[in-house]
Length: 246
Ligand SMILES: C[S@@+](CC[C@H](N)C(=O)[O-])C[C@H]1O[C@@H](n2cnc3c(N)ncnc32)[C@H](O)[C@@H]1O
Image (cartoon, rainbow, N blue to C red):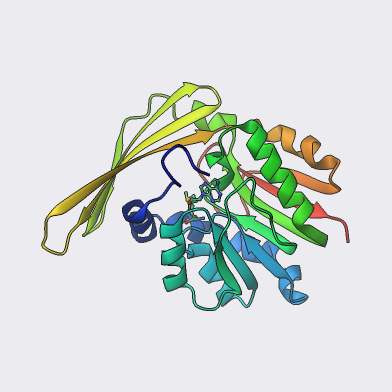
């Protein structure tokens, strides 16, 4: 989704995410793969939303899944195409307005829906996800609950660095349902000097306990939990598992 000056995750932040922030997708993958075993058994199609640089996509494809991986960021999609060679497709799809192809499973990690501009847009995306599910299909996604913000109120800025990149993040909570992450990324140039880019990520927090009721009319039964499997996720990051009856 555009936020006034193009999609989130321009070139340098996309690369820094790929190099230094793979731990979340890696942690989520075993639980998601276990949930998707019945889909794999019947050769179903998995639609991934907000695939980023393809960190989860690679695990899905490696396990034998047919995957359409999508994201709003052209820079992320470029990285994903370099990182994953065997996906059915890797294509641009911006939530909540772009149509979703029908799928046997929809997966998304890294609070992709929390990047949408408001609660109505998140509801629209969740409804589109539910409608994309074929009979017997399931979705498994994470997104930020209201408690995500409460738990980070007053947190100090954080830094992380690798050999050729560094990131500083400063967060704020201007309203109970808005979490702002101001990100400065430094990337080393070929000549050894450093360049800088800045992105502001506006995340919308919702009361995830309301989602099962929101989607009941779509024929999808949703449970709200704190993990896809046995992994420990950050406090306030909720996992939604939705199932359409066969
Ligand atoms: C925190 S990253 C997670 C990326 C990847 N899933 C991972 O775990 O490494 C959030 C992703 O959501 C994507 N995104 C943000 N807004 C989006 C939108 N409106 N539609 C689709 N993707 C979006 C970003 O481009 C980015 O790749």
